[in-house]
Length: 113
Length: 113
Image 1: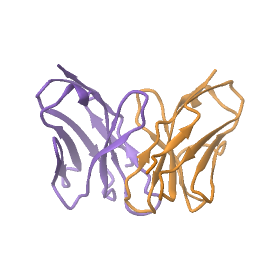
Image 2: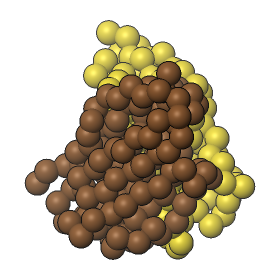
Image 3: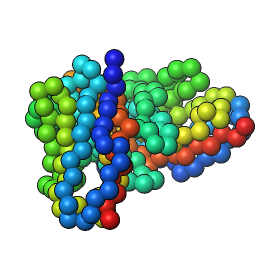
Image 4: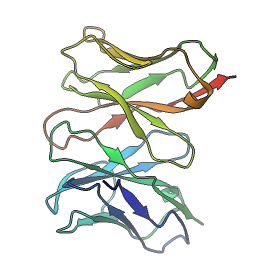
């Protein structure tokens, strides 16, 4: 059983650019959530996808967008990057909805200069 | 109302000692309370979780104590080991809607050999 995998592991972008982060969910999991973890802070919920539909969104602007594919993998897209977008972006998968535990990947470290 | 407050921010414990981390919440709709362990460069990993219908849950050296009336819960690590040195996050979610996790700000635990 493979866990949650994210790519790339590290990324450096310039302010104003766009970035796409990718996530493969754990085998059998159909729900993917994305979290932003700033240095020294707890993860903050960005949004969740269930069966290819957005199923809730946190307090993030529309320039943060996502997709979920039929194989349940997912992408996080961020447009018009700002310096404050520098963070660890975590993808988590879970089985269905409800209180199924979140299983996190190791994240993508994004640095915006 | 959506916050989860975690303390202490950092904790140093001698090997063999008991580590205690506390969390408090306001929203009584929360009904699932997991604890995650995060090592540097890794994503958070589920350690143990509890629902409000029980006051305590134990798994190996890790115990969650839950006080529903006080809206507080805590993680106890018995016989703490240097390998337990990591950052610990409490979280809360509700079994309706988006099932997003609200994370605490984390506790950096260092266990001295």
